[in-house]
Image (cartoon, rainbow, N blue to C red; front, top):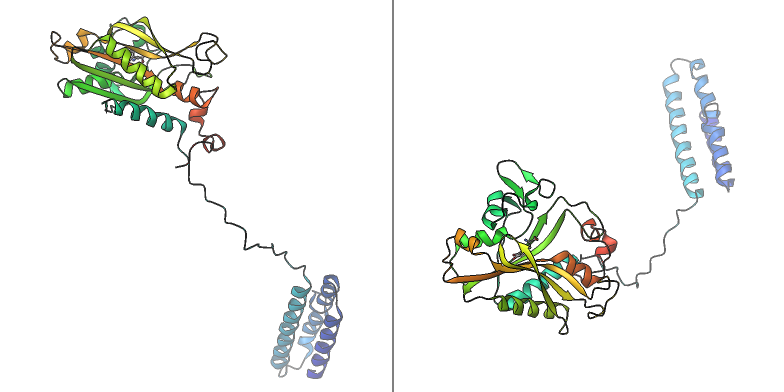
Length: 337
Ligand code: DAH
């Protein structure tokens, strides 16, 4: 019996050695180790072996099967198509990891803050969840004013709104300090605007406030002119167009000459030559009195300018959504951190 096993092993080994393709090796495997193969046949004969020899023969048969299996697997592994090894060129320069870029709004905001800082303004911040008291009442906004409408303003419970402008920061600052006050306050504001190419329910403003003895409209105009010239270039002109805001008197909208066409009229300024940038005016005495300032002694100016608008003009963006979509293909085009 033992001899028979040895012969079988030799035969199988020889056949395996002759196999040159995967298919041939599989055939050998099937012939010996298959369900109806020669090893299986031998196992079937086991019950016919005398009972006292059966354990030993059984053991030998198990060993034979194990040895055959190992031979077959080695051969199969040898014939299996080698996994292609990618050629690695170790002299290739490494790929630089992406380190992030500044958001275009951050870039513009930094510029704006730098310019106003250099003119003596300090940065003050206020909450985005604001009391109606600060967002409207203290800013002299009459109860009937349309900006209070629920169609414009997002109201929250317990006398809060999501702030619709950065102007309430003026009040918070003035309540906390005596004149002279010279602050800017950049931040997010929210309105129930239907989103389109130039409107977003969340956008950014920078508020400015200067209160001191003898502050006039000329100071306002000079400051805004200096600011926009630093931002858009020395040829820039500004125009203050009469308007109404509850918290300023007189009030004016701020236009700057279109820096694409320098006022001649083009697609960007819709042939107007001017671009609307925000609102401004002399702080209404009601507002100053409301925070306890002496209105006989102090006057002030204020302004609220759009930041998204500046970013869109500066980077030639035709849709405000680009600023909130966070599409990496867009964002990666800006200055690296
Ligand atoms: N808060 C105004 C708005 O969102 C902008 C504004 C106008 C701010 C005049 C001011 C100002 O400080 O004096 O439309």
